[in-house]
Image (cartoon, rainbow, N blue to C red; front, side):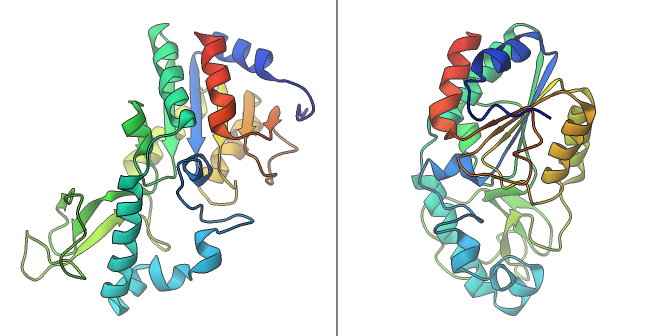
Length: 255
């Protein structure tokens, strides 16, 4: 598998996108880092370097200490509300419009829970790990989007059932991903011609498996990440740039 880290792959990638019947994009925390949000894994200031995920991001942690867990997630929720989509998010939304206007398909699979893609204007977004802006009743399973201000109590009580609490509607360690999101992802992976992995460590499954499947299928595969990952030497093009710097160039080339 060839790599183009030392040359400009933009013309080749733009040509592949212009001919594609379907483009599939997987994004991770790296794209939102450019909006000031912390990544989970990485060389500096990653969340799981500072916090223990087993104490904050499992059903057992919530059962053991719901106040601690919900305070932490409410902090992250408000951080996300204060963040703004960056040039990478905006460019992906523009690329989607360009692709859809010429009759091709565009599927955005995100591991992020911040909804910055939605706020940037992306439409066909599928949240693999849920959303931190949606909270679920532990008794009824009903969901709501809380107001922007901080919760008044921790853990927050459910308005749907006095016996219930609210928890973030995200996928914790040990929980299954949304079957509907997985179905969309699997279908897209079987029909996609061009695959982008943007800002993801490529070590968290099942998203890492999507990359592997795309490589094995032999389509055009593009990694966009300032840091090297396990797939860097195996994709068609591995680009060491920030999404906010490179994606606008691709959008301009396709326009």
